[in-house]
Amino acid sequence: MANVRVAIIAEPLDITTEIERVTAGRGDIGAVVTFTGLCRDEDGRLEALELEHYPGMAENEVRRIAEQAAGRWEISDITVLHRHGKVRPGETIVLVVTASKHRHAAFESAEFVMDFLKTHAPFWKKEHTAAGAVSWVSARQSDDDAEERWNTPD
Amino acid sequence: MKLVYFAWVRERIGMAEETVEPPRNVETVQDLLGWLRTRGDAYDFALGESATIRVALDHDHADHDASLAGVREVALFPPMTGG
Image 1 (spheres, rainbow over the protein chains, first blue to last red):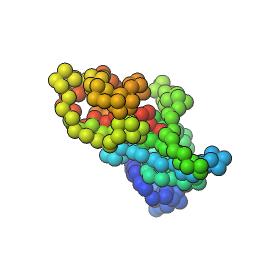
Image 2 (spheres, rainbow over the protein chains, first blue to last red):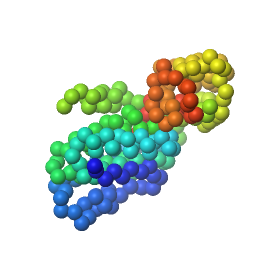
Image 3 (cartoon, each protein chain N blue to C red):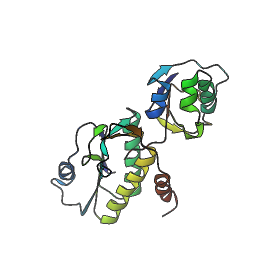
Image 4 (tube, chains in turn blue, brown):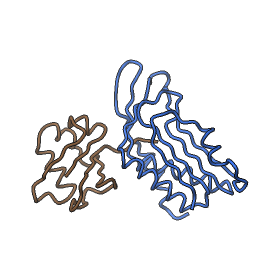
């Protein structure tokens, strides 16, 4: 079973540290895939995103998704880190790192985690615009569709 | 039973959590949503589009027809937008 590391944190994420954590002192890893989800400024309109989460459930749910990925693909490590609180444009919201002997398992497991995170992890985004307006981001049907493809047999 | 609210559900109801004792005929999530809506305009505004409301029972996602028997914490929230 893969090493699973999951955290919901308020501090900025550092991708280099997370890759080193997975690969340090190991000769058996042939592929590391990382996904970094960043806060966009929406053409200068957005000042920040505020991420609300359900403490207790959010960590459990992200761990459950990561463990599902670990059970489905041959990966040695999976790291999923998600921010909460205020995130500024250019900062990382979510970071997924998967490591495997071979690239396909690393790619696919990272994608699987992101698709389920979008629809199952209890986080909500609120936009703060430069003009001072505040509004909740709506869920997207395309995220549900992205998740659905994993439910059909490979 | 503890109720916890998130995002615009929390804002519309005007509080993050509360403890309630629903009447005995409230057996499912659907029943609970219906009963909460009778408690005032804020609840009706928050939970009116009930098909939109997502539910977790003791930290696990659940459908609206799920039973509340033995459940300690019910979370009500809009569709998630993380990642």
